Length: 389
Image 1: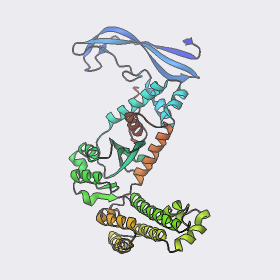
Image 2: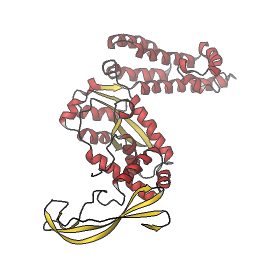
Image 3: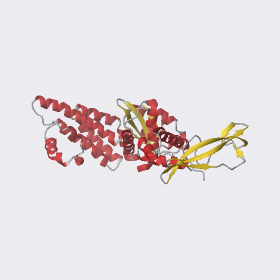
Image 4: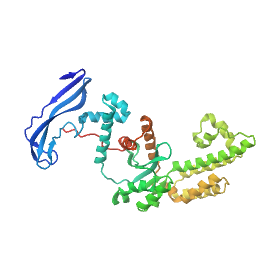
């Protein structure tokens, strides 16, 4: 029947006379009935509401409890089919946009999302993860970070397995201690940057960790780019003092790989990089290091690195020398990429998705909601409520 404009109410009658306790399954006597309403899928653009007098039974062990209806989960005021639709919509747009499309409030839409994540986490089963990637993600302005552990799987099957507050040793400890011994021994490779707390935690918990840790290419090149930029800034000050502004406005040019340099800047850059500048020397050292990843084996890469290190460590450019010595200390874990062929590109892909979520939500003030959104979109969870046939 139509109770108000553009709304349909469907009365559902429970005709059974024999009842059981929904908790223990024991036969129970009918105690009373409670009238409840659930939002259902729209009918011909009319809002549809299911209405039913739900029986409450008296169980000797659990007291008066409400019978579980087949079309909705316990405590939900939406049918399972409506929640499935809402989850699909929430995956594609913000909570506000989803609420407007579905004709529900923001709090109701957020409640569906939170229940979906809780449901998915409860259903998640332990599994062996052969490869993992560890990275940090900025939660808000300043040095407020979250640690993300990602299980690579390619495209949509890459999943976030853990989110921890901060990026300290104890943050990652919580993840490793949550794994069983079988899971720990099943990990064959772990991609990460050279952040010391991550190294300490992984060595403490993961068997034969140094053989399994792979320092990611992206972060290594970032260290070199920072060194090149520091050399450029120092040299620019020296040149400006002498009235030479050749390096003015060239910051971004030195951060490009040669193959990615935009055509409109190529002529200017070709002139700069052949001149006798400290910056061009630092850039050449950085570009040569990238050729390391064209090697076909670990032995070939080791030989290549030794030659590169001889040049980089004797170049008299302090920022470059500092990075070269840091690479030397971590050389075994840098060369592990030729054994495990693992990069943090999977983690960076997840970071891009997380950044999109932050933009879509216009930032997060609540860290728990931030984590829930990541698991909702990137956790690979089974989010849907069960529909009882």
